[in-house]
Image (cartoon, rainbow, N blue to C red; front, top):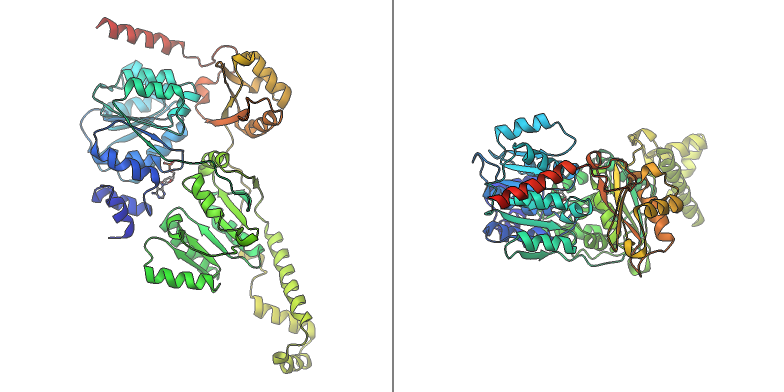
Length: 563
Ligand code: AMP
């Protein structure tokens, strides 16, 4: 048995799921998994799990769920409610990746064909992963019955609140079996969520992963937007532009560590890998070589890299994002030690962008976006490095050991031919541009909309129209792009194009209208379900177009009372 399975086994998971976890290359349980899995396996308590996205919370509840749900009971046994279609697909994929063996899992979200969903529901689903609006639609049609539900999971509950779904959630819970267990996950615990928990949960256990506000000042932090499939080639370009590259490359899983190390070695780099399956003896030998710089690239998981005491790294590369902001700070704190400034490079793929935005919020210091060096830049830099090295060597005068040979070479060959041949011998195909596969230009998907929270509301005298005007005036955004404005006494919410979100928050924050030291504007999350709700009403009314649901809700409440 490997270290990995032992770590997960100690939480109480069965062999079937231990195999699945090992197959996925998870090295050790994340903090939220350590906290929640044993409690959920006991199946006695409702729980509130406070954890950010990217902390492994999906596996934290889906692994125990798969232990409890064995399939084919003829009714929906678990409902996982999530705020966005994107998250619904992500959660469904994660569950499938653990192997479902007879359990039928399906995503039911807005924007997809209702007919197809009706067919799937008719055939029978054990675990439904759904967005609130569409779940309500199915309840309304009678195609979804939650009266025998065993588990209700509210994932990213605070986002459901931010996106205005909380009444729907309320309404859905009312339709669930009174015997259901409720598991609520949320990054923050606003009053309305606490209220919801108080109303529907039975003595919930509160499990929280702390993520303190942390800073990482000493290191130059940059990020590249890159396709997952181009990360390796991007890495080689970064290695090649730095003559003294000495770095740890962090990967999420041991499968990924092995893959990256093997590819690096195949391309001729001096790399080694560390992860939980590496024996203690191997680990010591690998570390010795790395400290002596026999190898200059260490590819590692977070756990395996713990305790590596190496100074003067030029780079830390986040080949994949860490599980939480704290790990990010630990990782990058390994550069910039002993007064030397280091560079932390983070690769961001589409799938990582949301988590990156929330991580960036918690980590102090600027993380700059940069472009991956072009092939011609890499080659020009390599040439310059060779010439610089030559200049340093020439400065030391004639190299006696090679003097006789030099004379013989100059007598035998044209100097130009001799030197270029020597360079070829020394640097082989280093300057050959064809060794660098093309990396297609790429930007992460910023399409869709973003929901902003502004720390001003009715108390400051704002109206929806006033918020629209403020954004128009300060940020130059057109009226048509400002939607779904909602106000509470202290806050306002507004939906704008995702592509404008960073610019708008930056501009609003720079005019310093905030309450005390709170930021004035923040992106709460991208909002991909906008089609159904974003009806372009420019802040007049709630813009959610769901009067029919309200009517239905009232009716159901009436029905209940009448019973
Ligand atoms: P989540 O916070 O659930 O969105 O998870 C973020 C990513 O972390 C997903 O790609 C998971 O597959 C991955 N993940 C979850 N648990 C672990 C773990 N223990 N070790 C490594 N990766 C994990």
